[in-house]
Length: 91
Image (cartoon, rainbow, N blue to C red; front, side, top):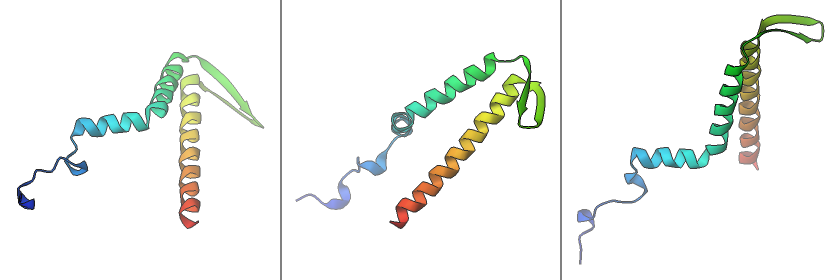
């Protein structure tokens, strides 16, 4: 009978960095593609524009405004996702 202490561990604890990167890519491939597309879209829109919202008017580079809107969306999604996870854990 083989001694348990002489076995090698090739289970989940022995993951390589390459396996972890592939796991992250499999899990987050759609968000990663969306982020890349958003970065390309923002980088291609560099003209100076004026944005009006309610009674406010802002004149700035379009890439800066798009970046602020994208970051606001990421923040809102993170907050909503965090609150949804809390609600699911309570049930």
